[in-house]
View 1 (cartoon, one colour):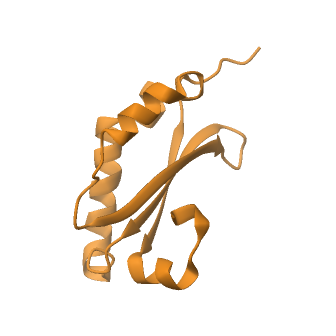
View 2: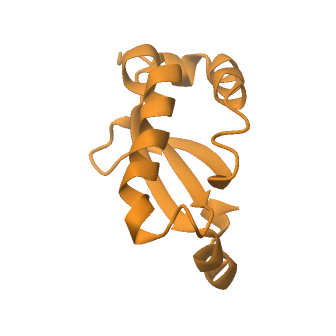
Length: 106
C-alpha cells in the first residue's frame, strides 16, 4: 500500500499553513490559490496559480518577482520536504487574467 503524503493526509494543517501566508507579497501578488492533484507522472503535487500586478509582471521585474514568491513559499511551507507534494507554479499578469478569465487563477 503506497504511503500517503502528509499534505494529502493532513490537508487542513497544510491549508492553515498556506493561509498564514496571506497576504502573499502585497502590491505584487493580486490573487493566488492552490490546488492538489497529481503531476504528469502521477506524483502528488500542489499547483500554485498566482496573479501578479502588471508592474510585477513587467519583463524587467518578472524573474526576480517569481523567484521571490517561489522562495517565500518554499521557505515558509516547504511543500516537498514537509508535505510530500511537488510544487508547481503558474503566473499570470492581472491584465492577462482580466482578458482570459481563467478559472484556475480566480
